[in-house]
Length: 189
Ligand SMILES: [Fe+2]
Ligand SMILES: [Fe+2]
Image (tube, rainbow, N blue to C red):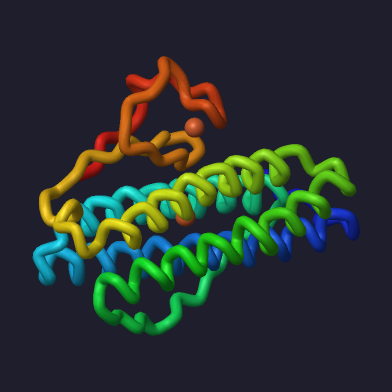
């Protein structure tokens, strides 16, 4: 195995990658638990959404881990204890987490990676950012209809296996974020 010397320029990028890896690993665990809770409340559509988002966060963690290894380090994450509330509260918490990543975390990490020309990290952050936007939108839509009964039946979501882009409709031949062929998307219910 080839080990890479970690340069000073890569130190901050690496720290950001580890933070993103930990965030995505925790989001994956959290959404998987929220899905079980939603099923137990009879909100199977919300459970489908949490399962799709959980899968996307797993893909982000995998992508960040790959770049961390390319930079010569091992990915490490501390998983935090889960605090599972009602599904409506869980949807609000999920949206809040996505907003933090969209408004603060990923833009900062992207600026830093771009400043140091770390293209692999830049791509991993940009793909995650775009997918988190789809999650924030889907969580907002779910919150808006939670009382209408619309979320009772299980729903189908489509998750890009390369970048985590998540959609409720098959909308194009390729992923709008990373260009992956639609047939390679994963169907999550
Ligand atoms: Fe997300
Ligand atoms: Fe994609």
